[in-house]
Image 1 (cartoon, rainbow, N blue to C red):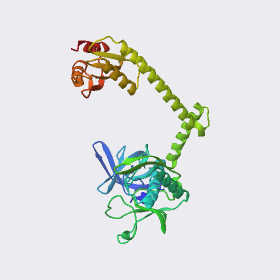
Image 2: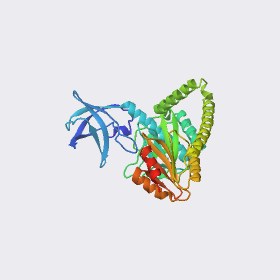
Image 3: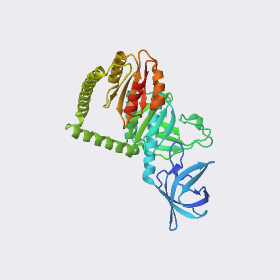
Image 4: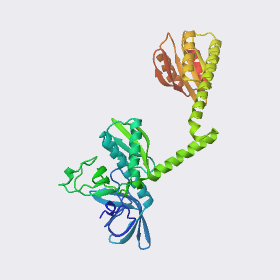
Length: 391
């Protein structure tokens, strides 16, 4: 019997092991009655332990095979033995908070926009993912998040029911898949005015207030719709604790109050941007002087050890190409870390130079007849020699 379906708060029970099989070094048992939810419907399996006399056996996983539940244990148990089952309750309750919170948020979105939940995954170490078949703006997401939390504050009942085949067509409920056999419905709110009704196999909290909090962490476009990443209950509280700690430390760093941090960061970013522009200007002028100082020749290359911006690199390469009639190369880096390069010519096919660089410098990259770019781990002396030897 699946006790978790109607007794989601039951943490312990006494039952019998009805089978035990060992395959590929793994022990799989079946229980006559079980409080342990198996992996199903986007949610991981419960864990816990079994006590058989003086023996303690850990339940590590639970899987459905041909409609039967098999539990992975760290040791075998004899079929027929009596066991006391103890659930890892803290983990179970955390998952119940996430799952019921997902139903609430999906329900309010479905009610307002008609979107369907087409994918759901409850992870223990990353946000819950909720996939919808329609798009939402940031403002709409914030509105739905607020409405979902108002359902939490209302502390409405959450109930499970098992309608007959005759009753089912009369009920407006959500379901991601076609279900054979008995359908289990989870109703959020009063039956006469439900927030949501959804086919679901998992344990849920008894009232919405126990979800505590629903927070949308982030969102992204996904398969023509949107994926919402959410946290609920204790995990949402821990998330806010972490964010508050970060903001507090930033406030201390800037010697300001928390409400003024954004302005401080904005000011710092502007200062950094201005400094980068000045550095880029200085680097451009210095490179222009170095290009002017290069000896007259058909081909030339220039080495730059410090970091320069993409704009400065492009402008410097163009200056070199304008001065020399043959091939030119701008190599940025050093012998230890390798070089990024831009090379080419205004009159010769740069792809021919790339062939030489690939053969003699093991360069990686490509480009057009006017310019090629890429990387090489060759030494400075070898790069210089290649350009000196060009016809």
